[in-house]
Amino acid sequence: MSDRETFSGTTVLIERESEDRFWLNMGPQHPSTHGVFRILLETEGEVVTRVVPVIGYLHRGVEKLSENREWMGAIPLTDRMDYLSAIYSNMALVQPVETLMGIEVPERAQWLRVLSMEINRLASHLLFYGTMGLDLGALTPFFYAFRQREKVQYLLELLSGQRITHNYIRYGGVRGDLTPAIEKEIRAFVEGFVPALTEMEALLSENEIFRGRMKGLGVTKPDFLESYAVTGPILRAAGVDWDLRRDSSYAAYDKMDFNVPVHQDGDCYARWWVRFQEMVESTRIIQQCLDGMPAGKFKKPLPFFLKVPRGEIYQSVDTPRGDLGVYVVSDGSRFPYRIHYRAPSFCNLSAIPSLIEGEMLADVVAILGSFDPVFGEVDR
Amino acid sequence: MSNEPVASPFLQALGDAPQQTEMLFGMPVVIMARGRIPQALLDLKVAGFGVLHDLTANEKKEGLEVVYQLLRLSDGARGTLKAQLPHEQLVMPSVVAIHPGAEWHEREVFDMFGISFSDHPDLRRILLPEDWEGHPLRKDYPVGGFKDTTPLWAFEEAASLQKLPERTLLEEDILKGQE
Image 1 (tube, each protein chain N blue to C red):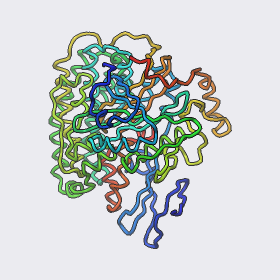
Image 2: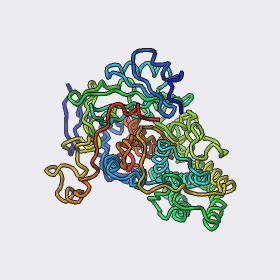
Image 3: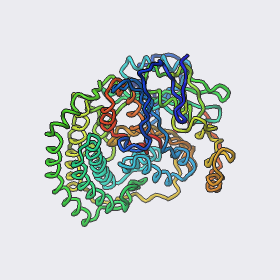
Image 4: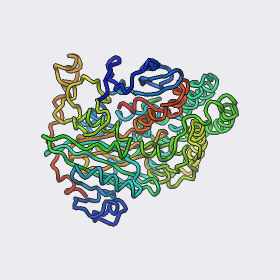
């Protein structure tokens, strides 16, 4: 048996003792951990030899709280998990519950869901674009990204009434309709966003330092990612063509024409590239939504106190971070019996330790940034 | 949405060993003895179900059940495996050797439900502090925590919540009554 040592409340198995080895504590309050994440790094010179991640600093017991509220009360809690793409979390919960109840959602509501989700994807990936540059020491991309992100936030505010915790997708439809005034705003935004994307891509993809830092760093193989159940842009950057939007086509995604960007390299640059191309595709989907939006109701009227029939179901949606799976068990009462969230960031992050081991200390931040974890979701 | 067990690739990969099988919303759900789970996951992995999409637990009347969600990336085929554990013996064989990604999931189930996993490389709490008492997702754990282990204000603020909802634990045969 190996010895155990405790570093401020965290017990670590010590495999080998050596005088050259040094334990370095990173986080939980560290600008490059994108939230409250703590990693204990065992280093030998500049090289990281072991990684012990410590999570749970943002744990609020979302699953326990959900069990003690009405079904309706569980939706706002999902906003607080992945706070950068809250509408996706709403969708992930609403979809299995609607399947259990056998609700037919109006066509216009399905299109509005796709529209709001893709606008949300822009907000999430724009933040990634900015912080990825920041992690490598480039300050300018952050301002380019946030100038656009502010407009995206404004559009989401018009649609949902909230800037961050949107709470937009409800059982049976969405919260509010798309009025001609909002449609005009979105069209105006898309018109200015397309040339801005070209500018933003050139800013980093043609940057010699950025390419030099990102290419060949943190290379992942599809087998490795599969064994850790890593999904989303990280998986697609390693050459696996898997996107639930296309492959299981929930909401109105089967009526949209879009490409799934796939890169073969699997390194940090590929992950950045895939996310950037997804923004281009999202813009296309938003335009299609605006052009083809069917008329009709935006919500099917349902009682506030839902009664979901007995049963259990597991369904997942594709979020900007990967597959967000929700396992819902209902006992037929007004309260959920059990709701479990399979958070994509949680699974993606579990692959980080074996990926970082053997890398240079300065690259830890770049690899972590390219995984784009959100800790509200990891800790739930 | 038929309830008839059709020829799904998931069930074919499991072979014809004795087990309870249901189709729920087009997804095969297989309940088996806990000792057979690792072998079943190994068989499924050979058949291409290489992604352990989710691993969680749920409390029922006669015990806890551990739920495995599997996914095949090549065609998107899915399936669910379940094992039921009686309350007095909450031990499960670990599947970390087959799916390394299960490590954190099993730690979370241990943290939240108190199910221990034999042969797990590093079974510690993951989301809660190491000195936490109790397992929050068990149904007998109050929302505000136990009074003697949490700050008083937290307990008092949650006091009104502590009372609801009154509920009974689910029977094992929940799958039966379902459309």
